[in-house]
Length: 202
Image 1 (cartoon, rainbow, N blue to C red):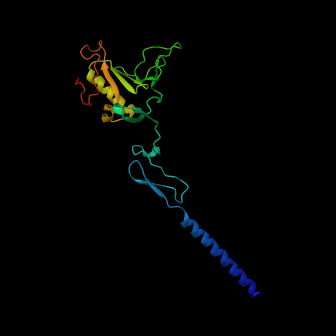
Image 2: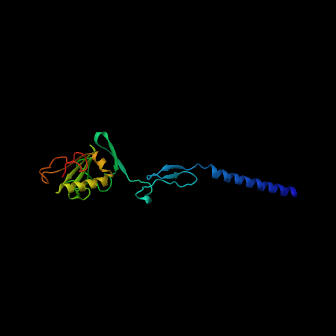
Image 3: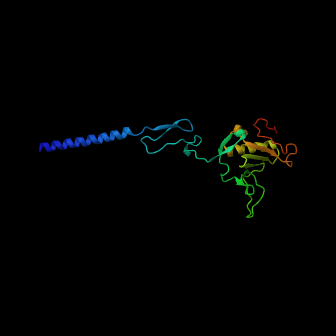
């Protein structure tokens, strides 16, 4: 009888040691968390013991999670390229069906379709902005005086729509001007963005 009790106690001890060993092995053998820098430079962890994954967040909107705003790549001057916000498929830019590859970011395309729709980009009164994807170039047409104010509005619009800085805008392939009916002196000239080298002072 005593030997049976002794064997039972030994068996329980062995089982306890096995469970303890398994528990220790599981808590120490999991891969350590890998740290990667987030958008604001602070490290975040991925992997490790947790089943969840922490990802970098957009510092301007911490609740947004991973910054998934769609982007596109466009060519600039001298073989440069820029990653911009996807200004083509943003639900506001209008496609020029008569001229494939051309898009109007702001203003009217200038014609109406057979179904009565008149394609247009963002509503503006003092400038139009179009983009030719075949040549990766922008055309900005100033429609109202004072031209300096119209140009400023167009610049602000493009900075926001493309998500580029002033210096980056200067590197784009672009023409910015006006028509004879708006201003006879500056008609047909590339006036440039106001903050770029060589820009015409208005």
